[in-house]
Image (cartoon, rainbow, N blue to C red; front, side, top):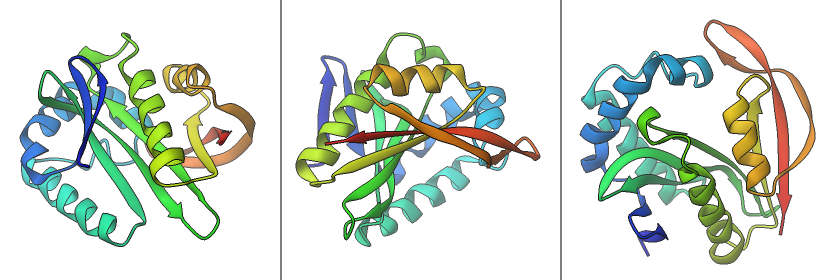
Length: 175
């Protein structure tokens, strides 16, 4: 399966280089916020950069180390959500996500996260999913909690963004 329904007008679908133009448009519109919390926020500088990244992702998916989707609203890619650092031997993975600013604040990412959790536990047979969120990223921490993740600890200087290291909350969810 390449596409999963989240709500009537929202889906997650496996990434495609065809998503690059729309995703890059959302990166441009949301760059200050993305750059604050995402290490790649300042370095993604063109549609071609995004297309190259999506092709890289497709290759990593073949290795079963990454499973990544575009968040689709009304048929348009507006963000991404993925399972990465997949360890099938130990049945766990980490989850990450971002969403264009104009689509935030409506529960879209919480619903997408719940959908991907179901895929991870159901289709991929994972036992545990981990999520890292910078301590100061209130929205991302709230999404994790709304989706049922439990705070497992604080990781000091775990995420590098905006030219410095930041503390991150480590969340976990066990099937």
